[in-house]
Image 1 (tube, rainbow over the protein chains, first blue to last red):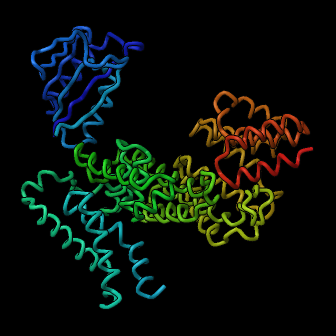
Image 2 (cartoon, each protein chain N blue to C red; image 1 turned 120 degrees about the vertical axis):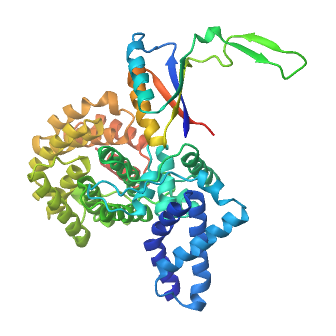
Image 3 (cartoon, rainbow over the protein chains, first blue to last red; image 1 turned 90 degrees about the vertical axis):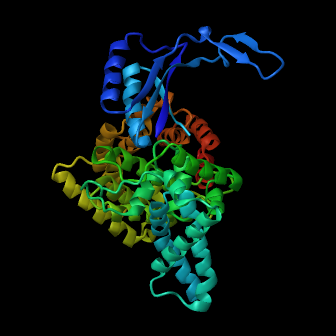
Length: 107
Length: 411
């Protein structure tokens, strides 16, 4: 079972910025234990562009699709046997990243 | 009620959870299990009056429900391999030896009370899947619309499936936290029955308190070694024992000191005391008691006293001191202060209550406690204001009646 694991940051109350070494160590462990599928940190939401090509021509708009205080700061994809395993890892991830984590199953 | 109807009701109580749990294990799907179990019980209602009660009703129901589930899968034309793919994770290893019996009902309880589900969802799912209450019964108990409750249960079953919430007893190191989550669900059901909210509801919903006790007994039978399970059961029994004395004929709450102790249920008290003694022996052997065990011990002190004047208040306060260390919540501190009033007088207690203002200003019991202490100190005007505030915030009809009565007695 694969889970999308989102790291949620808060613009008005951001998590600490010194987490990179801890996250790297955590990633090493995810790889060693067979949970790691993919991971990536995201650039600021200001760098996002939304494209809508449902009409006559593609329309580009500057910025994220939704402006909010909380935003997606990074993602993982994990392979885990069940939600209990994923939640346990997510609890560790939240400490490691000093941010909130959302766990959502792939279909 | 006819003999057959009575038998169906009894078998429903005894066998519902077992049938649902066994089917969930076999088919890996709560939805199929629930529907097939309901159909099997409907078949029993239809057939037993003519055919007679089968010699082993539980086995009859399980067999019938299995057949119904297979029929449904055939109807839906699900291939066996496709079906297996969508199954819940079933852990075949027996749980680690922590006093838990390997019983599918235990898996069912832990799945329904999973921390990834919202509290209200856990309550609804547990009452439906483990307790066997119908959706209309649960909806009326919690004053929600049937359609809304049905949606909540459907969503929960879908989440369990989609997110792969497993069907198993948690590992030993996770067990205390998960058991405490299960007990929180049962305690919420009990309290909603004991202090029913809503302007037009009965002040005590015996159906809910009885159901909470029944489910806690089941967990006690499945986890006989767990101290907090024993503690919660004792707490419920010692509370339930005073049920009839707690509300007057006129629907008004009767405070502990005014209750007719002769109508307390002696059998429930004896059972509760036995459980408390069992936990005291464990505590003496060095097992630290949790909050339910301490709350049960407090209730045991109250139910030991034949008269309010015989209450061992120093013991009650000592137990609250212990409880505050386990659970430093302001509500516990408030209850401790109320006991302190009996030991050190209302002035000392009022000072302790007033310190909780910031945290409890929106809680009716805080204002009710202040009102009572101010009344005892002869500060009628301030007491009246506190009663007004308590009445405004109280949700239970018997409590409102009691508080109004007390306020109107002020001079």
